[in-house]
Amino acid sequence: MTFLEQLPGNGRNDSPNDPPAGLDSLKGIALLACFTSLALICLLASRVGWLLHLWWVRLLMGSLFPTLVAFAILQRSNWHREMGGAMRTLFLIGQACLIFGEVVVLALIITASACVFIYRWGAFHC
Image (cartoon, rainbow, N blue to C red; front, side, top):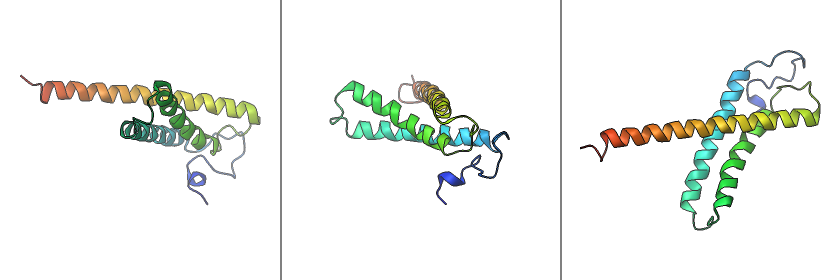
């Protein structure tokens, strides 16, 4: 049994019409994995920035990889199995993009809070 098969909402015995168990925790896991992969990409991009001298390559890597991580977690779940293959895939891609948007807003809030804290109590305190 792989790690993705052990996630909540991945029960194989559920009927397709039952709401999946642990859906909120599944979205939370996808959000946490997306946030972690975004932080990892930003850390790696700062370390090997000379390899990624094109701004659009950094933007593509920073947005595509975390979205793919969230999509992979949602795809392996038992969420909306009653939908057809292409429709379910498009729906989960949309959900992964929404999760990535939430992660970007969360990262902006954390960054702004850190800047305010550093400005008010850090080295710039008068």
